[in-house]
Amino acid sequence: MNVGVLTGGGDCPGLNAVIRAVVRRISIAGGHCVGIIEGWRGLVRNLTTPLSVEVTDDIVGLGGTILGSSRTNPYKNPETDLIALRKNFGALELDALVVIGGDDTLGVAVRLYNDFQMPVVGIPKTIDNDLALADFSFGFDTAINVVTEAVDRLRTTAESHRRIMVVETMGRNAGWIACFAGMAVGADYILVPEVPIDLPHLVGVLTRRRAAGKKCGLVIVAEGAKFPDQEPLALDLPPNPFGNLRLGGIAGVIAEAIKEQTGIETRSVVLGYLQRGGSPTALDRVLATRLGLAASRLVLQHRFGTVVTYQGGRIIDSALTASAVATQSLDLSYYDEAAAFFY
Ligand code: F6P
Image (cartoon, rainbow, N blue to C red; front, side, top):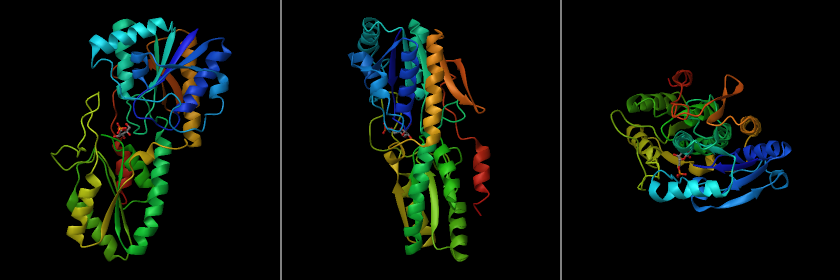
C-alpha cells in the first residue's frame, strides 16, 4: 500500500510526531509512505520525498514539520491547480493520503473526497484549538506553555518597573490560547474574540489592583479580540489563499488606551510565531502519536473520508465532513472561570 502524507496550514508542534507514527504503523504493515512537500502545493507541483522508519525515527520531539507546509488552496485555481493535483495523485499511484491540517487544509480534503472520492484520512492540528470535532488538538498545549513561560518572564520586568504589560496571543477568531494561558499566569484580565472588549471594566480592574498595592498588571489579549460592533484588527497584508486576514495589533491599541486612562506606564508585546515554534510538550507528542496511529489504522482498513480526533479523553474517528472541520469558539465556561479573577 502506498500512502502519501502531507502537512498543510500553519505549522504546529507535534506534526513530526504524527508523521513518525503514520510511517511506523504503515511500514510495519508492509506499506510504503511518501511525503508530500509543503502541503497541497506539493501535490499540485509533484514535490515528494521518501519517508522511511529510519528517516522519521528520531523526530518525535522536533518542532515544525519535516515535510514543510503551505496555505496553498488548489480550489482557488481549479482549472490549473486542481487538475494538476489530481494528475499527480494518479501518477504517484497513491492508495491513500493522510492529511494533517487545520480547518482550511482539511476543508480541501473534504472537497477532494466528496468531489473525486480521493482516499483521504484527516488528522486535525492547530495551536488555536479551534476545530469543532476536537476537544483539544495537538500544538495547543505547547502554545499555552510557551505563552505561560513568556508571561512569567514579562511579569518580573513589569514588576521592577511598576508597569502594565499587554500580551497579544495568536488564536485567530478563537480565544482558547489567551484564556488558558491567561488563567495559567494569573492574568489580571483576559480579552478574547468571543466577548467584546469592555474597556471601562478593564481599566477599573487595573486601577483597583494598583490602588491595592499590586506592583504590575498583566493583560492577555487574543489577536482576534474586538471592540463591540467592530471587526478584529488585521495587519496590512493580503488575505491568505483561503480568504483569512492576518490578525494583529490589538495589544498596542489596548496598551495605549490603558496608559491614557490610568496614567500607568504600559507596554505591549506580541508573542506571534514563538507560539508555533520549538519542541512539542510531552502531552502534544503523545496526542500527536496516538492520532497518527489511529489514522493509520483507518488507512489500513480502507476507511477513507474519515477524521480522527480527541474527544472525551479518547481518540475517536468520524466522517470527514465540512461540519467536522468547522471552527469552534472558546467554550465560555472556561472564560467565566477566568473572569472570577477580574475584579
Ligand atoms: O492558525 C494558526 C495561526 O498561527 C493563527 O493563530 C494565526 O492567526 C495564523 O495562523 C497566522 O498565519 P500565518 O502563518 O499565515 O501568518
